[in-house]
Length: 391
Image (cartoon, rainbow, N blue to C red):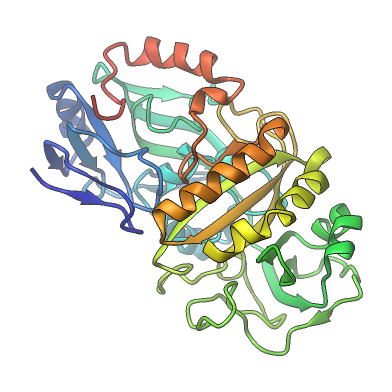
């Protein structure tokens, strides 16, 4: 049997076969011809969301699709966000948000609620999905709230219609001088200071503010000092793979991600978790996590704080509440990281922390308030459980 490994190397599984259909009709035949099927994308998930003991299906061989319809585009599900961004920029268009890594596929990003900061997750841009369901039928879905953040359990998505905006330029600046009292007392002000805002921390004394301001927006003065040299989110690492900083103006797709498309993203040898807590209790969450620094910091590369606005997508971590997304990039020490995760999740438990479904978590998905509702949709769409994980 072949072996599939994810990008980080923390996950491997042995599907019965790996398939590369060349047409949608071939894909439909593959789905009907196998008991268990999972689409695989770029392998940037840290969880077992793509694992199967049946057929792993890559859509990289399908004919590429990129069609502009005014304020929306229809694109191949397998296209990476980086490639999509370049295509959009050429025609004067943009996505409303980009995650830290432009390397992930469109389908993978929307199926997991992947996000940037200061806006809704990328999945909120979805207007229509075309997919092959558990019966091998090709379906178009425009009532997308239950279908977008689907964890791959509703079918194999082939194309996606996304809302787009006019292209815009961004200036990215890293700021020094942020302290914990300043952050906790001015959390809302700080995260409203630019189009996209991130705070990096080690939960002890290191705090770094990254702002991505749309060119033309009025600058908001926070009393901090702009860095005079380029920075990597993890102190001491090379900035070669980072997008341009120092307030230098550039197109949205070359500033909103932290990392360039043609470079190794993030740390590389790492594990990741992320929890979404309600903004109304964000300061409380941060205070609790600071008290855990002796547990967290020894196994941590860096943490990132971002904000995500509320949406109506059933399985979105930001469903019906504005959130602070608290991300952990861990060193690749699985046992020690799992122990730290257990302490973090227990500490945040009464805040209803919703995990990012593509990252590691000890919380089962049925903790999400819409899980039963979504499970009913899965049973109707895929009664045989074809798109579930390994039996």
